[in-house]
Image 1 (cartoon, one colour):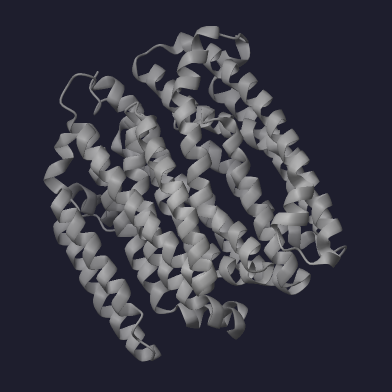
Image 2 (cartoon, one colour; image 1 turned 90 degrees about the vertical axis):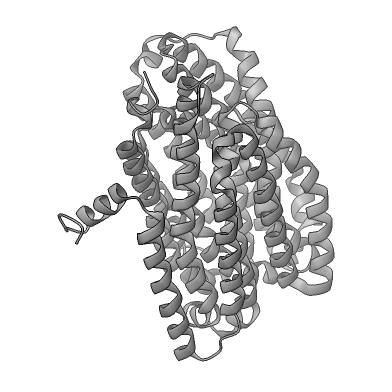
Length: 506
């Protein structure tokens, strides 16, 4: 069977899966826009800064899975591509047991470190230290739930059942922001707010178990541990663990370092524009979550053959992410001050608008880097990206610390963007090594990104609202024309026209 004929890699299914993935993150994002100002007003800047760190911790807890969640997606997808379905129950249960053990270890580590984190690392006001410590103790309880959920999502993603995943992720994503707001009439303390978040994580893991049993009934019917799966799981997951630990450190720990070097108030000023810009990562994340199992299945089918379809998946992923991100990020860069002032007030706008402008450039680089990152892992070389990230980490942290002490939160945004660019460039070069068929489009793609960055820089020079609207109109009109005529294929244009209710292209 060719890659083109395989049900799990067909373009129509991939497109639908991307849409479902986008919905699962866009809906909570819209809720976040409404609830964040309410939270800031209800609990104050200091508590909101600590809550932002708590949100970061909940997401970062997945580092304790040792890469097994992503390894499950790749290995299960490979089994499907090679028609070795009998291996899947043993693979899944072996991974689940390992991830439960790792989750308990993670709980013990964070529980033990909490007094040091709250008392020494973070500059928590003295009147908030007691409730913050209690909240962090409670956060540690959620680690096993988070890690097992990551593994369950990995299995479901390998079967590309993103519509069903979305049915769980949308309500859980909404709950992450609405839950804390629902506590405000009763308490403004961090402890009950975090308790609600932990309860949500427990419900999530139960829902994912039920969904996995529905999609893969043989896993429920054949409970067994397969020791032969330990080596591929740890071999694949071990290097993924390095990236799983290091990448979130470089992506999210800037807020933690800001809290240590400056203050939790500075965390609030940085987090507010960061949350808006970084939420656009839902777009590349949605694409890459679909590309990872599709690439793994396709590479298994095309093993030893010409990898034309793999190259097509890679190039399409880059193009679609660029097309989706560029106009949104350009508008954010243009109207950063005006938007922040309207949303959360002039104080936050004055302190955060330049941060937002630089992070917009960084998010473009980071979003594009996820495609080659996914390809490197799908091709069985997670060690390549892991070694790259190990090299980047000390340089990034040193640069971040220096930039914060000299330039404040703007320095953090500058260093974050520079690292995202270097990471994207290195991963792209690795991908060209793995799939030489992609090299034909490399120069054109590089020039497109360079032009985009120049437009971002130009956008920061406008002060008048009318000038900003004129610039946005001219650039986006030209962008849409170029994409329509020179990037999208005829079948893609027809698909879009049908989606808009137009039968044929005129």
